[in-house]
Length: 187
Image (cartoon, rainbow, N blue to C red; front, side, top):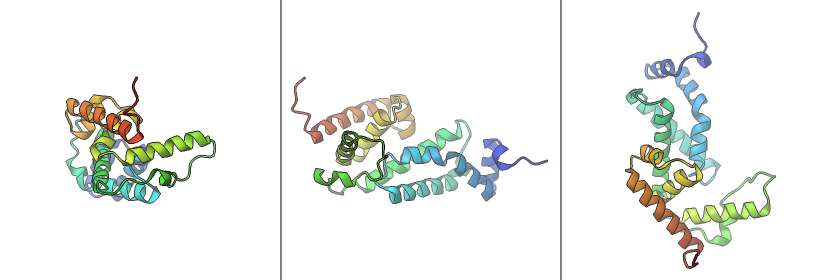
């Protein structure tokens, strides 16, 4: 009696997907779509860009699945691909001008109904300020501060040294302060 796809262990799904079983790959996507969406949504500007980014991520996963060695959990391997694809997206946007603060409200759409106006405005200002960061700064600050990863985890995800993660995190914080006009304040 053969197990249903939902009951199959991850290793067997990966083996079957590498062998060309589309149903097994579809099951892997189903299992990990939420995790990929959660990470990628930190970098995409809107729903369409998020859909495109996630599609690119799963295409890369499909193409590279045969190179998965299994010496680390599949989820870690997939998350690293997600981070790299998100970083590529940020680099593509590098030359786009900073959106004027007056237009920041249009950056975030579909805010949940329970949010207060102050929270909505704070989120809009943060999104506006983050759009002014260099791609590596935005990646560092997002992974360190918004997703609360450790320096070691960020180094693993990005392939940067721990020292480089610390420096990029520091520079990102400084750049955010400058963009927000907080760099002149004395503590």
